[in-house]
Length: 159
Image (cartoon, rainbow, N blue to C red; front, side, top):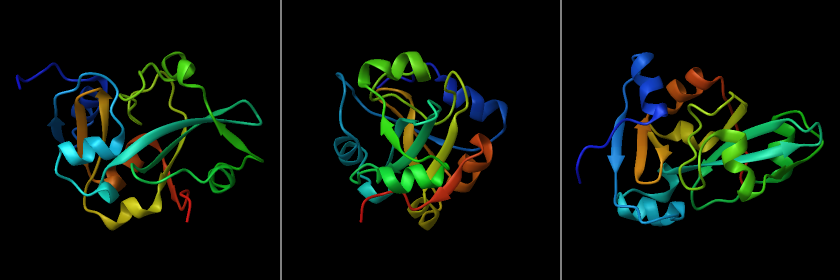
């Protein structure tokens, strides 16, 4: 696969002199995270998806969770100090984040929303998540990711 232009997320990492590794794969449209983990020969516990939710306050929040897991909406709401949160509609992803479904990175959204990364990310030296477009993933240290985007860690997945 030819080297493609860097994504906005990658340019932000470069500008901040944060080391990361690009993982590129063939993409012919939306693929779920478990499929992507398989394409990259990575365990699903180490590959994360980016989810966007809206709280009762109408504020948006970003949750970064392992691809094979489901977001626990109650735990997610508690982690951001909301009474409740609900996932935004797929049709709203681009207008809220600037990204498309399947290419939503926690880095480089239109606005930096309060972000929570599932605490299991801290079990790994590096995690993998969307690089900002379909077919591109970023691998980097979860603590450096949290520092860059001002994220917190909390247990936000279903048990």
